Image 1 (cartoon, helix red, strand yellow):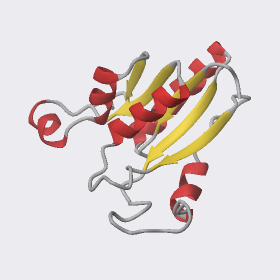
Image 2: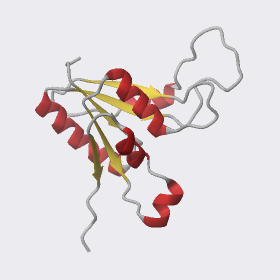
Image 3: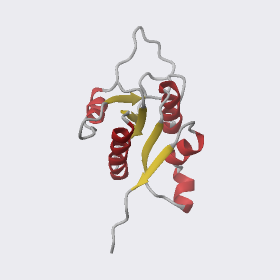
Image 4: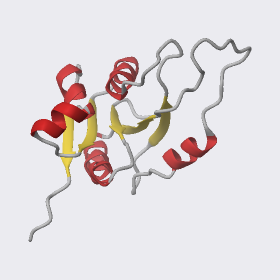
Amino acid sequence: MADKKILYATDYSESSQHALCFAESLARDWGAALLIVHVSDRELQPVGELVDEEPKPNPEELARLQKVRPGGNVPFEHRLLYAPPTSETVHPSAEILRLAKEEHVDAIVMGTHGRTGLMRALAGSVAEAVSRNAACPVVTVRKAKEES
């Protein structure tokens, strides 16, 4: 993998797919590799269960993530993330930030749904939480509105 890394987080939404174009361009311009990341809302290891070996990722989720690919000659790898086994809830922003720190990424690129006001307050925003807490630059990409 290249020395520079860009973490691209996907939730498979249309805005997320739009952000892949920006992540790919940035990676190509910087000579960086892409870490294509999705945070699962499933448990890898149910809380309180003892296991003898490391649980394997869900094959369907892994296959879906592996379909997300940049075009061109940008090196990339996929990472399917899960909440820690001791956690009862998944916080995608925390998992993205943890991986960004572990991998010493140079930037994070992710889509945003463009919610405002009450919807943003109720639904929260993974992109906003990542932007506020990341130690590296964060590029949030919102799909352009359709003209009427």
